[in-house]
Image (cartoon, rainbow over all chains, first blue to last red; front, side, top):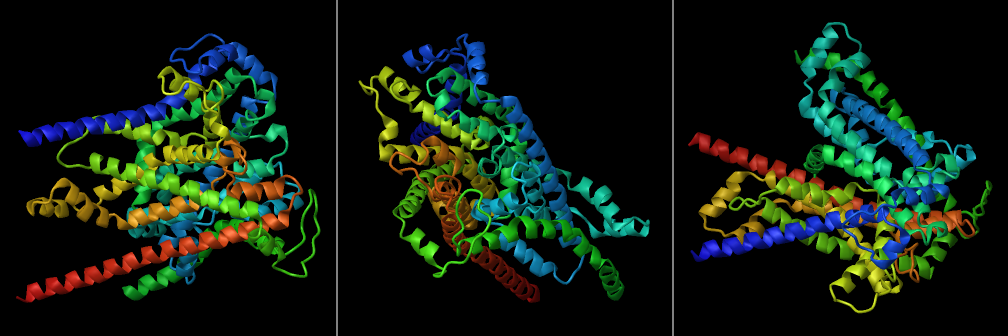
Length: 280
Length: 323
């Protein structure tokens, strides 16, 4: 009897903590979305409202009348994210495939090397990277944000862990007997088997590229090339200082696509995080 | 048979090299060359917007000495560590607590799926957006947080949160905590689910209660995952840029200045000191390399431990077989 009661108390505590944390996750975004529909005067009187108002279009016209251009930001971010994700997953799979399927002399040292450089953050090498791109006069070229993804050491590491048990060498050999060329075997046999791993890695690669601020901020100086995070950083500037409603609307425009996509893919994303940790 | 297989694999070995070419070439151009170039710049007088030529300094380590003696850099390093610690400790504690609850075998929490989705959500939102959002939330005099506190009668007058150094640092730590505890929780849960259920069963047969099981069985079993989380979080924390850069631009009075923001400001604003920024980058690189090495060694040791354990079990089985 007594044990049952302590059990109930524990359960209540669990639910209270979980609900508080859930509110903490939702509240900031809820306030933001509601304030995006309210006028600056309304926000100054009461900064929190649980219900929307009717100033969305007015906020939008103020927002777009200044330097914030969500369509340009969205297009550039989409181009970079799609391009770099495609490069990253295809070439990481190819590299990981060569580490599993073939026996070559430098295979082991190469894999050790990949593990060693996996943790080097891009930011550390930014000065040299910037100077290199600047000298080549490519600073506003989106390719400079896409091509480096071809060499993604941590993704190669993950793919190798996945390929090893998933792909049987007999299958590769059978295809060879049928006369298939090596590159064709990779594209038509290995890639379809790797689909689940490619999908998970694609999501993470896309999200991190979409959210990246540092590299684009350093490289892109032309307003037509700005990405979404750079557009967002403009909202911090003086020109929007007193336009509370518009700032909230600008933030909302950048958050909504992410939240909507997340709600559809959340199951895969969370599974993907869990999967990636197994390597630890 | 064996020989034939070997012959076959040497025949195909060249494809191993060919398939790695795109990775290797890209790595050489976009990673290795910038690393070397950054190191070289650290020893030169390279500065000024649009500058293209440089010469080596008479005292090669001058930039490194200047950076290590620079009070802003020391402040930035201290801030970065402080804000990381105040984010990591609560993050780990909450993640462990939720892991214990969500993996409890006796009382299942309903709606776990929804809770996980909500806890993880802040992690996928653009950090730049989150930084500016929190700047607005803590606004003065009528930001939402002030509004909330006044409505509930907790305070009478609005507070200027963002000019207080301690509060500003605390908010940055909180944002990091808020964005990452869900991620850590998902990783820890998957680690706990990977523990063999027999261990838990034998613990409950031995009469271990919930708390004992958690501290004596669960935590030791996920030691490597905890270490992995610690090191990756520390490396991420040492590179913290988006949030401190956009939340208060490193202010008030350098309180939220991190090393990454310091490096950015040195190189891409003011007098464009590429050489100093490169030297600071290299100092951070050394710190991160040491941390990575620690993780690498720890993970390797675990593999060796497993092999040793496996060999022991094999021996035991053989002995039993003989009986």
